[in-house]
Image 1 (cartoon, rainbow, N blue to C red):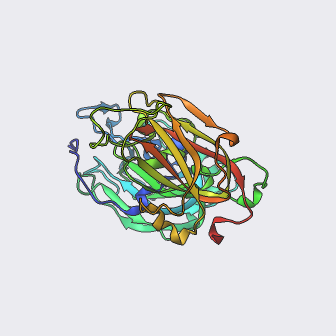
Image 2: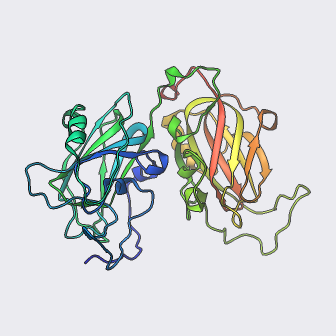
Length: 386
């Protein structure tokens, strides 16, 4: 019987810093699964980490927090189709087999397609398998012929030291749907699909107001000072945050003054700050900004500011060096923040720094922000030409 693992430090691939394109909270959904007997395929794309509940059984067997099919007793293998919440290029996946120790899937492969339509929603229930009608309809997609994203690869059992199966993906085509093949059956707890959204910018008019940093528009977090409680990439996810874990939150600075003082505007005098840097989905001019401290009530930052710059992608590593400041120009001057509130800054409150490709959000002294929106207008120069 599996047991709750203890926390431990583990080195993970760099691609896990990217956005999860399949997770349910950005719109990912399961469009088809051959079998949902012990656990429905929808569990694969839950935003939460998998759990293990000792002694909990359902009428079908042991309750497991993942996708688990019955022991196959007919020809074939199990598979499902995931509609990505955000279409894009995949850089890596994490096939998480947590708690599936004697019942994990031995091998997996992934195929992908770029479809021009959504697939119908499905009803999923434990103890069921795909109906003849569902199989007939899904067969029309010929998903067995989709291009290979990950070739048939062995997985490891879901113990603490072996549950995360990381695979770098070299196929950089744009994908809207994935076919996940189990060979032949078994259980997988979660599937994380790390990548970057790929929008067709040729369809966006130059005079259309667009959130240039949004995840779904190709925005990408490329660096940060600290993400102790929540990753900075959460700032650009769709919708408002569900809770504090769905935002960027840093740890408290140990060197903060013993007694805090403030200036005439009420902004605290504190040394240092925390920061995160984003590559825009497309270069442009920013005319409106939103900073949202939703859910951050006793731990919001005292203040924030935003800077912008224009730099080629091949040179952006230099931006992550904290004291390399010569390329940054002020965009949003220092602003006092407060708890659990949306702040909107219009064009007349912003500095003009021209066309930019990257931004740096700085908070002082520390704390949490749930979302950042940067509305503006794209230029004729795409990011690839910088």
